[in-house]
Image (cartoon, rainbow, N blue to C red):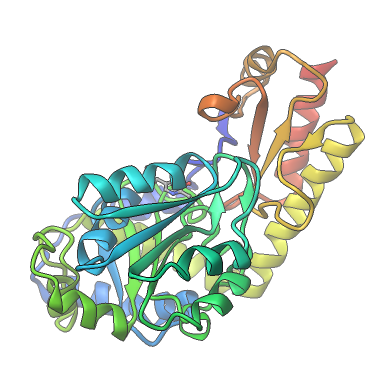
Length: 354
Ligand SMILES: *Cc1c(COP(=O)(O)O)cnc(C)c1O
């Protein structure tokens, strides 16, 4: 099988798969409670929070939609939009029956603090949604800058998607005052798709308790009630939780800071390759993702042909998301990749371009 270097799902290690395939246990059993409770300390440390970390058997979108349903009450939601995933979120807000306002910037640009301040100063907002790392464009917004602006709007809750940046760069939920931090299993965490992880601040939980249209499957209050007994509201994907336990073991054996440094090094190797070939970056300097690179096709190469040749050499890359198809291509450096495996990919791309 060719190796995945698309920005999700990404390559899953044999160790993770072995953990995924452990025998089943009952989800109300003591064995399950031990498994679920046992991973909490490490999850909290990774999230940078004192709050419980909830596990949802869904893709990230389940919790993205759930955050809207739980936290947007009588006010509006401001959806920060700068790429495919963040643009979709406003559609989801509206389908949930909420009054949603767009803070739209051009694809390829980050969301800036002052833009957020200007939008929020209209007043009447319950929540803001932000995608920290727009996977479609390779843009990473400055979460600290955003969080600093949010401090001036204490009644507005900040919902942050870190699907493709979680454990790649430090994101301290409590310190930054993030109200919901969410991620998924198949991107930065290098697990099979199907699990979402999230945590909610006290403020977020207080808001949720007041909203009576939370539904059931993604009800934050229901998650908290079950969490108190180291359980989930409904039968979770126990296989994913075994895989997560194994992944946490990997992360803490490597060391969280070392993991961040490895991602930075992987990413720098790709950047060097981009410059050497005379390609441009789609994202501006200072806002380039550390988990993937979105490369602008300024040289007018046949991107589909490059992807095809790379696949013949055993590497699957992405030929551009949605309207950026052919105009960009993306290389992931997430998960378990190392400088060595990144160089293997780039050597294959060199040969494919020649
Ligand atoms: C992939 C992705 C999602 C959607 O994840 P699903 O697991 O498909 O629900 C959301 N946000 C970002 C930033 C992503 O990269």
